[in-house]
Length: 89
Image (cartoon, rainbow, N blue to C red; front, side):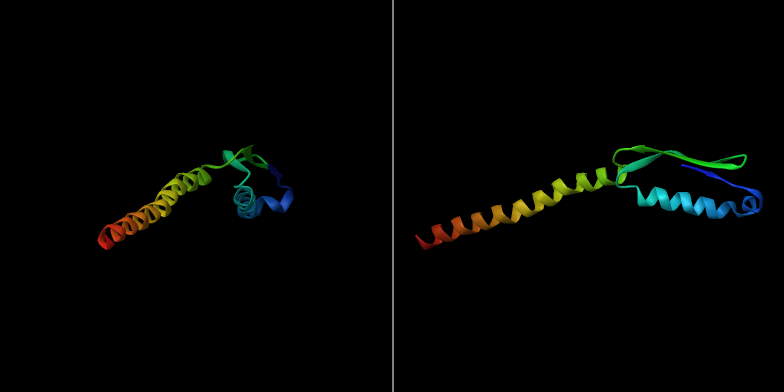
């Protein structure tokens, strides 16, 4: 993404920075920032690459733990059921 500042717009660089940060945040689920925001002359530049960002990978790593946690109570309930059967006999 490239923003071009003209005339008096040069005095409002913070607005361009805010805009590019919002774009990066809004597109974080479909891409990641490859080159951070930089200001070169009249141009403010940010480069994004397609692909998942690093944050969803962390969420995926957390999901197997959640699956294990949900499977453990099921295993415990079968153990309790087998204990109950042995107590009845």
